[in-house]
Each structure stands twice: as structure tokens, then as C-alpha cells.
Image (cartoon, rainbow, N blue to C red; front, side, top):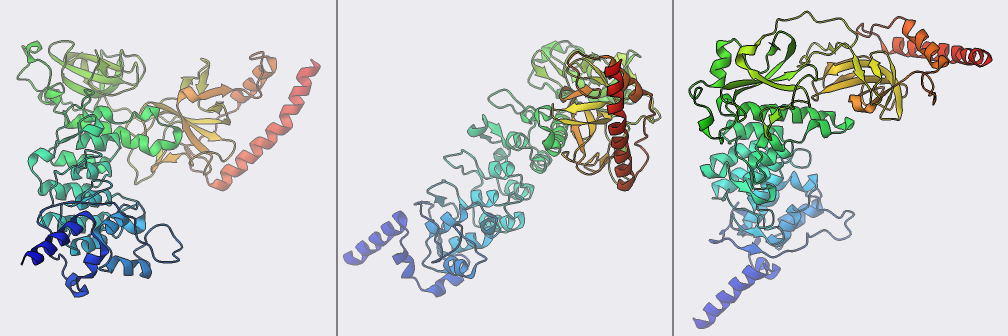
Length: 537
């Protein structure tokens, strides 16, 4: 009896510390037919191991689609640490089979809350990571997560190295499918739990900082608090990357950031945009919520309004403020005639470009009348299925960094490198602020004048690019170090005297190519003659 007990203790020690293949080999293969075979009653941390690979294998990563790899995966002698090592490989071949690999781990008696010794992550952590679109497969991750939660997986467990729980991982990798499942099987406090690696922000902070639009929407639908502040005093809306800081090749991300900011700002109650501020400054308006005030005027956030019958803009905020008592409205003006960027005294009430934000009493605004769209060349041409831009374009006038007026039709230099002609100037639907749409001389652009189904101007594919005014410089023919000399003035006069082409009319690529070729031919023939005439005089 004593010998038997000693042998049993020794066996348990070896299983706990080493998960040796000899112990696994002693178990008959038939025992692994069951989905879960005698799971351990208490979770442990498995030692780190290397991922097993077939002999003479051509790749450095494990591919479950390969028959030799699948044979290793289903082999009872493959240990739990080795299977954890396979899951750690961040390749689609592995992550798309997360449910199959996870089931094999459970077959070997792994506790549902066991941890990988290298990452300190549980199977549920890996499952949320494997739901990442592009690399992983949300459906496979969902299948395994349902199985883990049914076996009692703890959603609140955190990795010691990242301090993230399963919900944080699902938010970070933008997997709303898993967020819904996790919140159903977790305690209410998990929803707004914080993570020290993100300045003690919540899952909503994590998703917002990574532009995870789907995760943010899902969290808000389940009651996530958009007013919780992290250690830096930021609400989720304030950790969204600024679209104005993004480069031109990140127009899609800029559009997501814009939508995300507005979504989080709208989630904050209008009458409670500053819920954490003292109420002593609001003696007369405690019982007048902002939305009721707007409703009585027939207004809502996003409406076009007129301020003092002189300035027009978009209504962005209504509620109480810290800088004065009473109800105030915040307006994003069409022109830079304001006082701020939506923040006063270090507190942000809404977001807009600098000098375009202004606050006013409710009594000073009125709803703007709908105007007939103008027929200027900068008006975007929309496809029938695309949403209209939220802001109307301007008439195409701005100043370049040198203070020179730039208009639609002018020849410009983009980012100091690319020459082209201005075809559009105004606000867009993909990013806040004002943008120039330029038709380049060479196919070094990004598009054909349309972005995400909204057409702003027409040009050949790869000839169109958008740039902020700070990166556009007006040019008039060849550079003249002496400024606008007689030759440049003559070139400019001839250019300005020519009628502008109407780019609103639909033209085929063949027509555009023909016009561009004729224009270049005429310029090449006319300019040398003008240059010689100027030198002779």
C-alpha cells in the first residue's frame, strides 16, 4: 500500500512539473475519443515548450492542414505544453484551427483555466486573440469559447504579463462576436474592469485607442460606461487617435477615427457631458436636460444652425459647462471664425479643427434653412448607393503655406514633390477639416477622385490624391526665384483666361486621356515660343 501511494504521488509530481511524454504514452489512445477526458480539478501553470514539427518539414510554423502536422496534433504523446506552443504561433494556419487545437488540449485532461507558462494566458485568452479578423477566424474562436465557458472558464482571469482579461483581449483584437458571449457568462463588474497596461482604462478605452469600431459598438450596446476616465483623466472618446495626425495613405483609418469619436461622444448623455463636475455651478438648470432644450427648439445634434444671423455651422454640443452656468451650445463653424477646438479650460466638450469651435447661449442660435446645392466644380459627385458627405464643400479657395490664394483649377505642388491641378476643396466624409483634391500629372496617387464610394472629382485611377492645405503649394508654370516675374504673370494670365472645364460632367477614361494629352501637347509647343519671346524683349 505504501509503495502504491508513493508511486501515485511521484506520477502526479511528474505530470504537474514536466507533462512528460512518458506519462501520456502510458494512456491508451482509445481514451482520447472523449471530448474531455478526466480534467484536472485544480488549474496549474504548464512549463514552456517548443512546438513540435514533422521531420524534414519545409516550414518553421505548424500547419494543421498538413497531414504530417495533423498526425502530431492528434498523437496522444504530444503534450499540453507542446500544444500551447502551437497555439502561440501567430499565423492564419494555426489560428483558423483554434477550436481543433483547443479540443486536443482539453482531451489530455487540461483544466479549463490552466495557463501557458510562457505567456500566462489561458485557453480563453488565446481564444479571444484567435478571433482577430484577418489572421484568425471569429467562427472557430466562437466555437471554442462556447465550449470553454460551458466547462466553467473564468472570464475575469488576467495574464500576469499584460494584466488583460478575456474581455480586454476581445476588445483589443476587435471581436464583437466574442464580446457578446463573454459578457453573458461574466459578472457585471467585468464590463468596466480596468487594465494597468492601458493607464487603467476599460475595455472601451482599449477598443477606442485601437480604432476597433465593432468592439466599441458592442460594448456600448451592453452598457459600457463612456464617462469612465483612465489614470490620465481621459474618457474613451479622448483616447481615439486624432484623424488630423494621420498621413494621406490612412484615409480609411481617419474616417473610422472620426466616426468612433462621434459615436463615443454621442453615447454620453447630453445633460451629463460633465457628470463629474460640481453641481453647485448649475443652480437654475438642474432640471432642464440638454436634449429637452433642443427638442423644444426643433433641433438635434448634427443640425445645421445659424449663430447671430451671421455665422453658420453644425451643432455639436448642448448641455452644462464648467466655464459658466446655464445651458450652452457648442458649434463647429464652417469657417475658422471661432475661439477654440471644442475645448475650454482643458475640458473637451466636442471635437473640431482649431478656431472653428464656439460656444453660445441657446437663445442665439436658429436652425439653418436648407440651401440648394451649388454647381461649383468642387461639389462631390456621389454614386447612387453611397452616403452623402456630411459637410458641404467650399467654393475652392484657400491659402497655401506661403499665404498665396489657391483655387480650384490652379497648378499646385503636393508635399513638395508631386505636381497636379486642384479639382476639389472643402470638407470630406473620410476625415475632419478641409482637404484639397488634386489630379496629379503622374500616376502616383491613391484613387480616381472617389473615396469609399463618395466621388469628389474625376480623374484616372491612381492620379487622384487628397491633401490638407498645409501640404499644398500653388505654382504658376516653372519656378522663378525672383517671384512672380513678367513671364510668370503672362503664363498666369493666359491660364486664368481659359475657361475652366466642368468636372461634374461624367467623362470616360478615354476622354480624360485625350484631353490630358492635348493639353500637354499645346503647353509643350506654346511655352518654348513664349520663353524665347520674353528673352528677346
